[in-house]
Image (cartoon, rainbow, N blue to C red; front, side, top):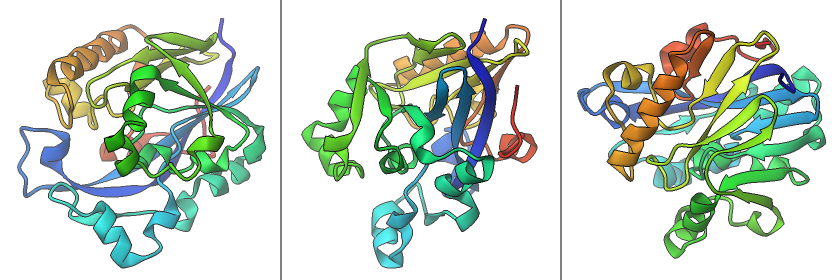
Length: 257
C-alpha cells in the first residue's frame, strides 16, 4: 500500500560544473550543465516536497553571484530562468505554496535549500547529523538559510524513517554528514529512488565511482546501497543532477503514477 498518488520532477535550474567534480575519473577539462531538481509528491495526506532548489535571488547581483558560486569546481554561476522558479511550477500544477505540508531536505547545500522560505508553514524534515552540521560555526558561515532558520519548523530524525506509507527516507551519509535519500512507491507499484547527492550521475552507479564526498567510505556504502535497491524489479534511480536523465524524464507538469 502507498499513500503516494503522483510524483512530479521540478527542473529548477542548472549548475555549470567540472565533470571531475561529479565523477572523479573524468577530465577536469570537461564541463557539464547539470540540472538542479526538486520533487513534488501528491499524497493522500497532502503535498510533500523533496528538496527546494536554488534561491534565484542569490543570482540577482552578477558580481555577488560570482563571489558566491564561482570556484575551482564551478567555473560559472548557476542559471535559474523564470520558468525554473519553484513557485511558478507549483502554480502551473495548481498547488498553492501553503498546501505543502512537509519538506524533506536531502541535505543543506544551497542548491537544495533555496526555496525553503516559500514553505513557511511546512514541517521540514532533516537528519540529526545534518542539522548539527548546518548550525555549527562552519555551517552557519556557509549556509544561505540562516535568515529564516528561526522560523523553520524543523523535524529531526536519526537514521532511516518513514514519513507515510510509500515514502521511505534512507540515511545515506557521505556527501554530507546527514545526507538522506527517499524511496517512493507509486500507485503502479513502481519505486523511484530520489538519490539526492549520493552521486550526481548514473555513471557513478554504473562505474561505482564517487564524486564529491566528506566521507568516502560512507559515500561508497550509500552508493552501493541505493544501487542494490534499484536492482529490484520495478525500481529506478532518479538522479538529481544527471543532465542525460533529465532529457528523457517526465518533467512537471507531467508526472509519474
